Amino acid sequence: MPLRMSALALIVTFLALLMCTAAAVSAQGYSLVGNNFFLQKASAPMPGPAPAAAAPAPQAVASLLPDTLPGADQGRGAVSLNPGAASLFRGRSGGGLFAPILKAPPSVKRLLDLIASAEAGKAQYDAVQYGATRKPPKKPTSMTIAEINAWIDATPGQPHAIGRYQFIPATLRRLVKHQGVKPQARFTPELQDQLAHQLIEEAGYSAFLASEMPRKTFMLNLAKIWAGLPVSSGKSYYEGYAGNSASLTWAHFDTEMKRIFRS
Image (cartoon, helix red, strand yellow):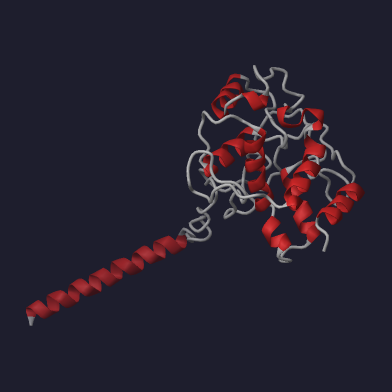
């Protein structure tokens, strides 16, 4: 009898402790979802708390901003719009996380050409943000990822958007990490396209093709990544940041999207 009572007392004590713990957790408002437990599938999980709601600092061709501003998130494209997205059309430069090289659909090439027309100008794959007063020592396509990172680290306080798609440092580093690109990999046109493919998918490319996302929503998502693209008002999503403005009109953007993605 005493043995049975002792066991019962242990069970009651355990249940009491469990209830106290649950009450404490509830008081703190803890939630697996609310604390990003299920969001850690992000293509490159960002450390620390979720970004504040403040508008991000863009790095389009027209911008003179440094890479980040106090209180802003880490820049356009730095945080994935679609955390589960991957680079659809090419494998990783340094390994086998994704399938081997696959040919991108013609619509993707035409979309990349449209984005580049708003972002890169005549320099294309060798474009460097014109506000960068201390340029890289070589053409971007001749540089390795390690050399680009070294240039970024050695020239603080200026914009560093680089390449045909004007990758800012946070975006470039996130994509490179996610795709397993080695530091010694050269920033070739092929690699730049490979990285941009992921951004297009993050904007909702597959969902749009499957008619699960309206075209204008897809266009808005693209404008959130590339500041040279307009939103429906005709302005950049980042209008007003150090002279940022859309490089294309909404009518041109809309017409080209309809032409590229004929229904």
